[in-house]
Length: 350
Image 1 (tube, rainbow, N blue to C red):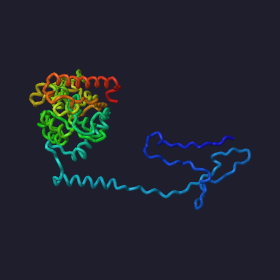
Image 2: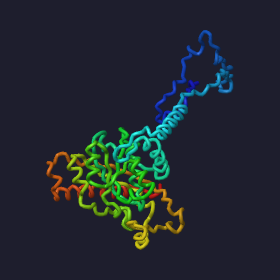
Image 3: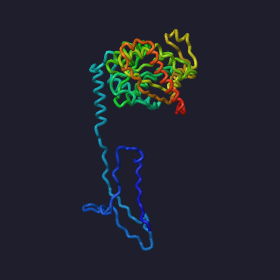
Image 4: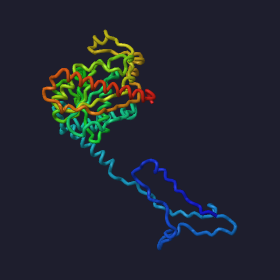
């Protein structure tokens, strides 16, 4: 009779777990040791009978109940939260010249944005290794979505996926800093006015700066023109990068165009409210507040290969032809990546 083999089942082998289970197999000579009770009894099979599994009496050694190990994680979190509240109440925290509050961003604001990023839009990030680990860099991305949620999701993508955990400082339009509450939150998140002076100062300090040159033309375009890049202005971001000698990193975002499909624009109402546009979507304003909920599309954010600018002479920032060529190069790279991601996408929502 062929010897029976016991094949251990270990579901964790296919899960890539970092913790490996010790082997359950033991040699026959190690089954009995001095001072230990015999766990397996040797039973001789009857003549003419095979050795069946139910012929073996199974004896289980009672193990004492394992006590849950308290590593103090809960206590540390509570202590950290109390310390955070104490610093908030006493004013013992740092804010830079632009109003950026790194502690509040890391512990509160990012925690509020992360569920939307991970669970609602299910953002997939590619090419984050193209962002340098240190030093200044300018990330240039397409802008869309009627409501500028793409900038916030890009901030979370850089913060959570970059190995160095870098913070992205976005350049925002004037309207952002004219709205109550939004103004304060934007400053706390590290946003600043989209002007050359602020951008050059941040890049000179070695910060990672994000800009969306399409502006309101990008987020306010009709749904029929989705994923078609609008004009990138006069190339001011290229001039800023040239002056500081920092690389330009193109970024393509797919998924934001469909969160608020803009099928109309109430221009008269927009002028009365002082907005660049007033969107009409299939759900807004017809469903009231419910119509303001974005559609749960599936997002992809891809960071392209950096375009270096440190090899140009200082006077290159004043060369209009060079700025035009670099601006066109960045725009074409973003547009090409958008088309490639759209071809690869199988569904808007899944």
